[in-house]
Image (tube, rainbow, N blue to C red; front, side, top):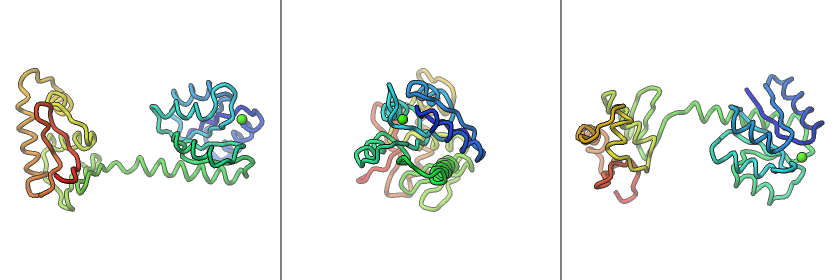
Length: 226
Ligand code: CA
């Protein structure tokens, strides 16, 4: 497990680094916001411990920049215990918050909890839309508790639509993503595959999940009045 500490107070940072290393974590330290953001954006840390009061780019700015493309769990650390700061931190995408001074065992417990939560989130790859469940690992698709019998291609097509729920995909996009080929003119193959998939996914249900967007393509989504 790789942790990144972004903290400008050298003694505090080194103390945390030592304590966490002794508990078996691999720890990297950045002593200012700029270096911290750089390390966080380019690294593959499992958790980031981020101080708010930093010279230059503060912790809020680091968090906000980081959240444009990273979901790494962030534990905010600060001497400020005001509710406004907490709310702002959570709004920006922090996962937890700890006010200084704190006891090391509490920090350790929070680190463990955040890492466990992150692991649980990544070990459940099942995608769900309404009563439809698609499990890409077990290659299984279930609707209303009933397993569907899909060909490998149909499964790939369904998994794509579910992964991109709510997003309209053109026939050309689908062709290149599912068949890995570019069909320049003839996207009829996609239409045929969609028709077969619909027969298995939607036909026996009143509530349809796969929709045609005329002139554009297809979208899978849960429509309340559909
Ligand atoms: Ca500080």
